[in-house]
Image 1: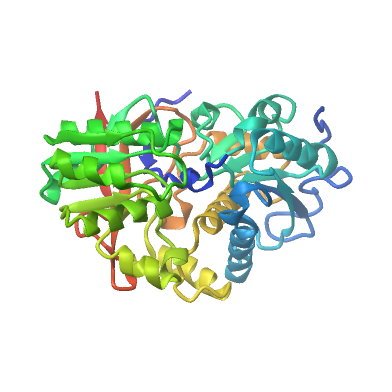
Image 2: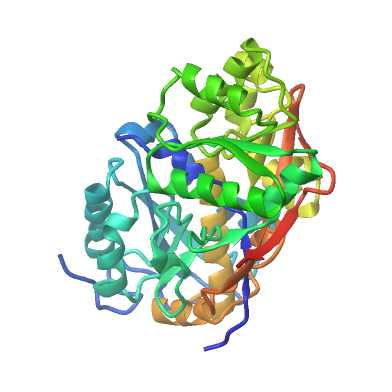
Length: 417
């Protein structure tokens, strides 16, 4: 196995938006109801690929996810067909499976996609996928599983299996310098932060605090027990104020983060910078009260924002506008669907447009070139679990626009030993 060190695109922490509350098909693709039929070639043919989308369509997380993942997948497939890509002649059939916003539902949905739908690949946009990971990596190990990896299962980081993250996976075992260096660059001296009492949120806050310390900041206040979804943030506001903190990191859902921001302003607490791990997207721009309250708040994200107006961002923005979103900025689940579909297309181009599933898995497992069509600052390396650098983009809400922060689009930090 190669040992090239992988660069990790900064985590979006979008899983925080959703934190609320058997056998296998051993037939080769081309079987009834199955995956890619070997009836065509890369240069043209009639092959069909059936793909399954695993996402919350009901339950507490449905409000965030719902049909957005499918919209993102179909938007990418449509754009690819219009571009006349290498596998543009493939006919895709898309089916959805509802994980009902819980791990048990994820397992049941994964089993249905494999055993009943006989899909060629599973595209996961869900923080609950870990419920079906054991089944997918053992009884369905020949089926590619491409996902946002927000469930943080360590299997996403490991090479040699059928799991492939379409957004690079946080590494909870290490701390990286980019966030602390960002706070230092804007003049911060004392760090504060708040998280929910769940592993993903707490780990994000703890890593940020250590990153800030490594950059020379003091840690003035942290609260890892914020009730999920609360708007009662008076104690948090007082804690931040009394600590003398001048920079703040909030790896929590944006409604709670916004309550903290409003509370600080009502208490006349001025900070040099506030970074929210969630909130970037069209949903915020459609709410006039949220836009007014979030002025000056910065957001971290793992892919190039639309405002950079690169070829890659314009392709995504154009496809999003075709879905009726005027800003061209996708909500999280739609962006995840886009990335999943883009990785699927990349894998098909590597393995062959009519490649069996096993060949797709083998080809992608040896790949280190996919960068989401230029939306990621560096490609994801599927040959290694090692990470030595994290890159994040920072944007600030000014008026009704997310403006890229100068010298922080992207900002990259090395691993801190």
